[in-house]
Image 1: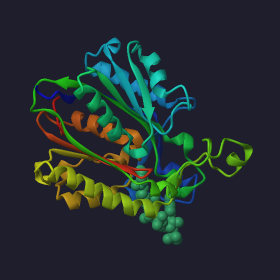
Image 2: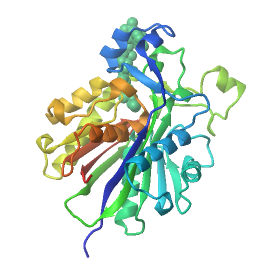
Image 3: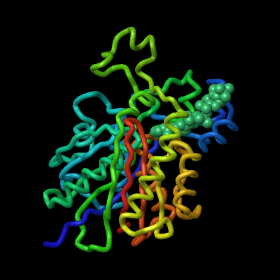
Length: 331
Ligand code: UT7
């Protein structure tokens, strides 16, 4: 029996209207536009409106997908949401999106894999489709990072932004296109370097957790940087090599956008040319689960992702988690 292949058949994105640029941040904390641009590559980031949550942004991204592609929400079988900023612990963001977009026949759930969330969610959707059980799986990357960012802490507040992006995964009969392979990894010793300690079962929300700022992201930037640089490059090379491919075969590389210096290191290890690499960190900063699908939509809109191109996506994030996927683009 021929193996069913999964492929991306529709895409959409959303970034909130409000923009916070580096000069705005200069007025909020002891930082400079020059430091932020040279150390991270970021110039500006979008910030959600008050009360605008991850399910709202994801629903807006889905409406963008509907403007571009003819997709009936009633036909969606499942919704897999990658987020570390769910609207609330429960119900899931997937349930809230289901109701917002009218996907009345879908079931779904959220997954927590921080910045690797989109790649993890793509693996789940791919498995669902390849099993033959589901035909239309909506994969969502949505993070409202501004809600867990301490805007008095210059170490972190310059790094993050808010956005959502969605892709639809469906079976394809054509075996030339679609998901080719993926590799996923995790190392729980990373828990000490990147986390949000407050509000969970370890440290339930209390006056003390709030006073100590435990509801904000904690990151040891330098340690995370070292891991990210080596692991994201290693896994990208590994997934290419085990498919007898090299950097030269890649049409577009869309890495997680946490720091331009991490991307540059990965690009030089893969020996890629600038035109093979999607970089949009300057405009959005680190939007966690949304960075890669945003890159997919921007790459597609800019005509840099064409049918038949080999797409390589790679991410590294909290956990630590990391992963890579190879897709022969079919849109
Ligand atoms: O997305 C999930 C995974 N996350 C990542 O991949 C992020 C990985 N880490 C990074 O991207 C980088 O480590 C950062 C961008 C977070 C920091 O860059 P860095 O080159 O590692 O800087 P640093 O933390 O070593 O700080 C260098 C200096 C320090 O001053 P001293 O000690 O040398 O006097 C910091 O206090 O820069 C200072 N600094 C700042 N200065 C101006 C830190 N933040 C700022 C700031 N503005 N916003």
